[in-house]
Length: 563
Image 1: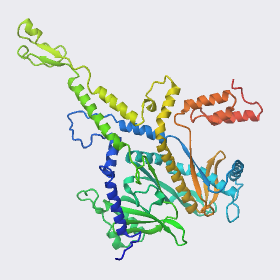
Image 2 (image 1 turned 45 degrees about the vertical axis):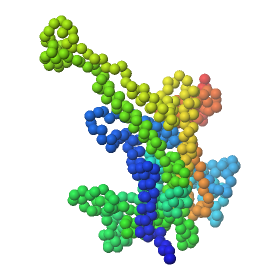
Image 3 (image 1 turned 90 degrees about the vertical axis):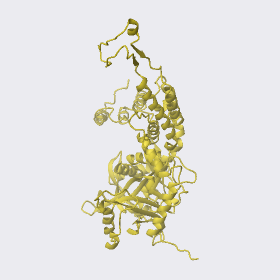
Image 4 (image 1 turned 90 degrees about the horizontal axis):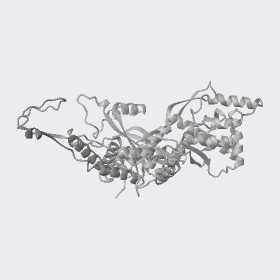
């Protein structure tokens, strides 16, 4: 029996890999990934009566416990500022080396630094470049709006179990740089990022958690037929193949008279690793639509898969994460049902019911103020003509609702202290309780920081492999300056990343001001240091005050005593 081996860019093989990935996801859990994630998203957003077919006769009330738990946990995990530090494996960095790097950075900021002419970079050059890349990460993060992307990946992970950030090379990005100076050719192209839905990402080995060890990765996209045909034409696809690009059969039912070009087609992009012509491992990709190759096999030029994955809860032997919303939905449904029954009961029995003896009061009762009722009969008949039935005292659902909401929040790690619902009688105790409530989130935080490190590592791979000779924009205490960077000198370095976490969200501006005041009173810092560390917006014209204090110091007047 002869075994037929298909090429990695064969459209038929890619279609089969996609069908296997879809089948695996449909078999996950009770409902499958696609339906479960749609359900989780609706419950998080508040559309929690979808598909219940309860009509409009009763008020469909809801108390969105899921969103409150999710907002709290996402704020704790993603609200802490992070910075990235690059370093090279095998290259020491002692305190003396740090001082050398600081002096070299000052020289580079003043155009007093030139790259050595040696064939291989030395220790000082490597440490200087790693320091520059650490600052350049922040510049790139601001350009691609990394904070927004992190928030989107974090929300995707909470709702679907997995958040994915895709990094790619965008040749159309304008850098404002020119080769050889302002008179040279403009330098274009830089990294760009996009948060992907996990439903559209398919790992070749769904039982392997490590992204970089995957045999291949598929990304599914729905694009208009016109856009896919335009891309195929730009990539040199024949007109006969372009005409075979058709809308997908699994898409929405087309509207009457809708042109084919506006309908959606399924486009699959496959990534895999194989050596290039020189024998070096590289990531390759191909893009297909049905049995048509939209873009032939091309090399991305990097050695790492350009995807970083963050799992909210890891599943054993599974590349896809798990969401806690799936297991909070039964509690949410029970709370909504009891709350709706409670509101309906209050509406029906909240007001006293009027009972009228029709034999004694034949006229119509309008309940208008000052209405005069005509009563026929004796005084005894008049006394019993109209009476009121008092509603029941309290509702049997209120205690059940309060208890279930409180227990659901508490079991999910969002107690009153964590949510800030406690009275601030003892601030230290409340802070201690809040810190204790965040401890169970530590594993999720560690996975999120590891996700940020993976993104930083992928960006560094793009920089050293695709940047060539260009200048890196640096913003630090020396101002804004540009560092000369020759990417090919650092391609063989083993670059590692480390995420440094900033101050906790519990330390707000009030606590920061209190600490700065104590340091100033004790003489640990002076007035200039105090002003530089104030929260933004705390003092108007802060830079002007700093310049005035510096002028006094230069004139020998000193600073006024903090006393």
